[in-house]
Image 1 (cartoon, rainbow, N blue to C red):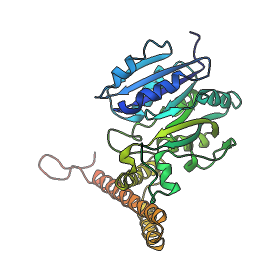
Image 2: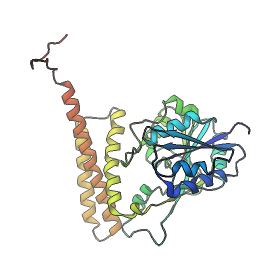
Image 3: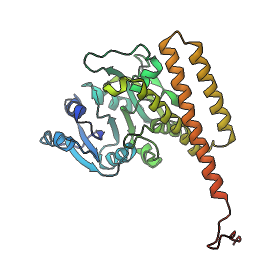
Length: 323
């Protein structure tokens, strides 16, 4: 086979229910020269069996990554990939046949493009519809992403493409040292913001980020994500993620307590203000709950910093003199 012009990577952890359809959607792409890499991130289910059943396809490659963590797995996929463009598809998503073609055209037409992703629609479980309390903002937590039918140059990092439908130019990824392994999911935690952080880094360095509407992906909504508890847990981890993003950007300090406190009060106030509207009420309550996770992370960070500044004690328990 010719060298691939784009590498499609699926990082997976215990998603046997959806993985086969995700792989098949990539193997059926209309793009002529591509490869598909499945990074098995310490799965304990039938993941390997599902991939091996398709390994006769010449485009497909299986890699096992024992260290848990989405960012770790993404970096492993990037190291193995042979092309200059790396496209990441979630293990519970399905790409449209023209997904890779649309992404490749975008990079070919813009040499300053570092990151690109496309529209995402939601696939609900059988006999399940969107809950009444699900606002458009919370639907974005499920991957829903639609900025219209025209290409959009992203200037606001909060509008960055969704990680389930995400591509990056290798030159830029190497420049920043890959995905930050302190962000991104590890096991059951919902730590996030790794894509937002990459967008911040790209814009700061003069690169461009784009929404490509024709790069369409559908995302399966698991049954657990139709429950209110999942969104509260997701909000909590979003707060922790936001604290870490501020930390690496050098924006920590007492101001975090003020900002988090103001946002907490605002969220609770709006939750009461829109009490008659289930979607608005729950959206603002999740926002407030997010701030509790954020404030907890801020306080823990301050305490850890304070402890590190305490004079070191000698074995006898006395303060060790400065050297």
